[in-house]
Image (cartoon, rainbow, N blue to C red; front, side):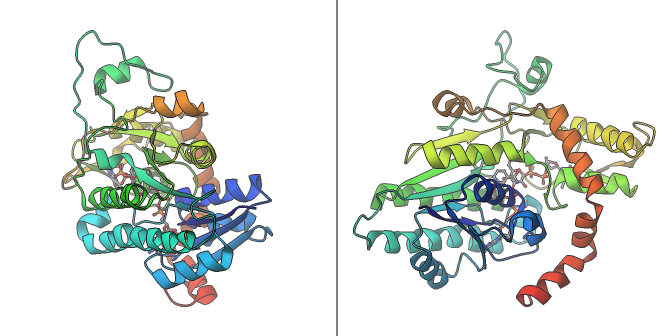
Length: 376
Ligand code: NAD
Ligand code: DAU
């Protein structure tokens, strides 16, 4: 039997990964370790919280003694590590929290796993430490388009997009060049994970993924924030000129990739995961406005005047785009949803789950968890 710790399972991506593993592998034991920061929300996991193969542990990954004791108690064979401070704007205001959780927290988990696994007779056999990272560690791509080069793929974005955005992509060997305190902390954690493989032989895997979107994302991130603001006719703060480009992937496709890589990925390898789906912020914002308006029965586009250009984010990366052909070629993964379908599903979900949104934004959910798990 596999006993797997998933860290950050009460967050956005983590909750989709926990749900997938709990439902797909009833024979596994899934232990969700989450500190329940402002971004952690157990309401994201209501549908699986009573499954017999699931356990929630409220704990801080930086707490080495608790991590070590939990690994011993649960005889852990695998770790899928998502817990992190994840919002770039917060990292600009408070970099220390990012270094603590993302760097020291990852190191604490690595060291606990090392001590626990190395003491076992079989040591690292059958074990996996899978670290979830981001494309932001690679820095930013130029928005250039060398003449006459055909984009390598265009399953989601049109070739027009590629012409507008450029031909360069992040590959697994792209040099690290992080610009924000968030991406610097993620880059540092990636290096620690690889160092534990190279130094101690720990069976590690790292994946670097592009921007996720979908249900249960905390409404400080672009898409859920804007959906909620459009609904309430609040201004939409567009950073700079809105020309920065991101590569968007539906969150369930990321969770599927994590499942595949956890089981079939090669130890010590890195895999890039992306949507082949680049959009300028302003274009995606217009799609979101049109979709929200249509689904609310408003005139499509009538909320365009909510767009408000504001001061740019400091150090704002211009463009991210992932080349995930390695994952496609070696493990057969590709995104399952066309973007149009994914964004429609996402907008619909947020509009139909206004209570989930209100609980977060009204502070109700803070109280709920304080009552349940003690004050945060
Ligand atoms: P999120 O902010 O929604 O969730 C993070 C979770 O980690 C929360 O549940 C939080 O309570 C928990 N957490 C934070 N600090 C903790 C600590 N010290 N101990 C235990 N738990 C703690 O984040 P997300 O967007 O779901 O991202 C998950 C992971 O995926 C992160 O590592 C992030 O860097 C990476 N990632 C995110 C994206 C994206 O688009 N969101 C893309 C690529 C990679
Ligand atoms: O690329 C992967 C990364 O994607 C993850 O590692 C991060 O955890 C995740 O937060 C995300 O980072 P971004 O900074 O790209 O996501 P965010 O939703 O904050 O912003 C998306 C783009 O929209 C970015 O160019 C900034 C812009 N933006 C964002 C907000 C919140 C605005 O213009 N206005 C806003 O209010």
